[in-house]
Length: 319
Image 1 (cartoon, helix red, strand yellow):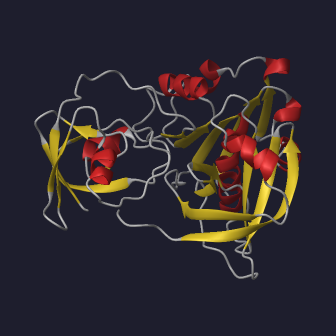
Image 2: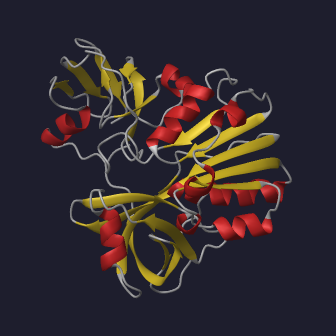
């Protein structure tokens, strides 16, 4: 992936409160035209201000191409994106966007188990609608600080009785992952999204589940064990034949930028997937929070904002 992905200006046509500290932003084309198609699990880049780009999961109906909807939870200790969305974006505002892009796709399975924590419900909501329409078996276990802070909780519980379990922490405590995940299920795809402690615990409980059963999406970088592999290596850009050395204190992305090579990027921490790049030769050392174990083993893509190569090694990238 290189160059610049298409960006567009949309209009914030509606802003409403979904729960305590959560607003839904409904965006439309300024001339009322159709918007890009998307699939459950996709996110949208909001270019809120110079240097302030954030990714938010689409939570509306993929069949409705007249609008795109995202939900934003206010994060008091965040990096400023959610505060900007809450405090600066009013109905009628122009919002520059990029995408949609999907690194959390819904796979086909006989049955599904969805585990949401807080605002992690947003990518799961259109997934639930899709599998419900398809007639698949599914269950949602949804935790949050309080019932009032849990977006979409009322509509999910009301329209799907018996399949939705709401677990506000102040009422029920933490999710009982031992009971929920302690017994592996051969026919079930497990989708989890939420804060890092929840996802770490889910991954630990799913260690004995079938390979590929667990699908997660993170809001922050996954803690990676220190590898000690931070020495220099070479990257060859296949389209131009240029060879660049990546120093131990620079990422592949930074090295490319310093050499004048334009590559699309956003989060710079391996969570959004914007800088995904095809690997033609060489073995990358993955440090992202997106790829599954099987995708890492395949080694045919990498996220150049964080992933590297072994010291003294060489990668050939499709750039």
